[in-house]
Image (spheres, rainbow, N blue to C red):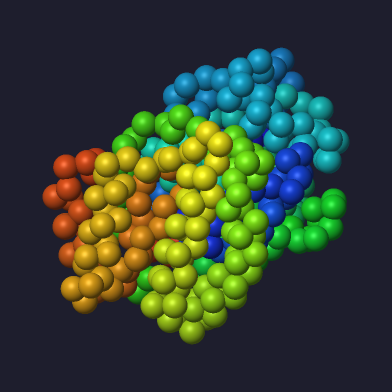
Amino acid sequence: MKASAIANANIALVKYWGKRNKELMLPNNGSISMTTAGLNAHTTVEFDEKYKEDILILNGKEYKKGMEEYDDYVGKFLSVVRQNYDVNLRCKIVSNNNFPTAAGLASSAAGFAALAVAVNEALQLGLDKKELSMLARRGSGSATRSIYGGFVEWKRGSREDGTDSYAEQIAKPEYWPEFRMVVCVTTKEAKKIKSRAGMAQTVKTSPMYKAWLETVDEDLRAVREGILKRDFTLVGQTAEHNCLKMHATMITTKPSIIYWNAGTMDIIHAVLEWRDEGLECYFTIDAGPQVKILCLEKDAKEIAERVKEFPHVEDVIITYPGEDAKVVDKHLF
C-alpha cells in the first residue's frame, strides 16, 4: 500500500480568489491555468499498520498532528480520504518540491495533486481524473487544476455538495507548444499571509470584491477563447488585467494585504516598458511576490536574460505547458 506520484504546479491565467464553502473548498468563481513543466512536487505515501500516527515529511522537515501546518492542510485531507473511502490505516507521506514552497508559486497545488494521485494508487481506489480533481481540491483549491497538463479550467459549480466543482482540460500541452512563462523569483522566503487566510479576509472586508466576481466570467470566456484560437494577445491582456483586479481586492482589504516587493514592482514596470517598445509580453502574479511573464517561445530567452540583470531577482525559470500528474516508480523512502 505504497505509491509515488509527481504533479506540476499550475499558474492561473484567470485567478481563483475566495471560497463559498471552506469545508468543501468550493470557489466563488471559476479559474483557468497553465500547468507548468519542470516545477513539480514528488510525493510518496504508504499506508501500513506499523504507523501509529500519520507522519508528513515535507522538504526534509517533519510535521505531525497538533502542528498547525499539518492539522489545517494534510490532516484535513487525510480525514476526507478516511471518511469517504473507509480507510482506517495511518500513513507516512514524504514530499519534496523542486521550487520554493509557500512563496506564491502554487506549491500546495502541486503537492496535493501529487498526494491525491499517490493515495489513489496506494489504496487502489480506482478514481478517474474528474474524481482525482475533486479529491485534490479538498487539500488545496488550485490543486484541482494540477491533475491535468496543458491549459485547464476549474469549474465553479453551483451544487452545495461540490459534485460539479472540478477541473477539465481545455487544451493538451502540445496544442500550444510556443506558449511560455518566465518565472521571476524575487524571494524564496515563505509569505507571511497564507493564501487561505488572505482569501477569507478579502471576501470579508474588500469593497472591490463584488466587482471582482462580476467581471470574472468575462475573463474566463476571453481566456478560454484565446487558448483555443492560440490568440496570445487576448490571453495575455486578459490575464494581466485579471491579476491586477485580484490584487486590487487584496490591497483594499482591511488590513491591506500587499504581497509585492521591490523586485515585483521592478518587473511590472519593465514589462510595461518592453511592451511599449514592441516586445510583446504580459505579467501575472499570484498571492505572493513572484512575477510570471507570459511570452512566446521566440522571446523567452531574451526576456529571461533581461530579468536576470535586476538586483531583486533571485532566480529565473522558463517554463511551458506541462504534463498531467502521474504515478512514478521512484519512491522517496
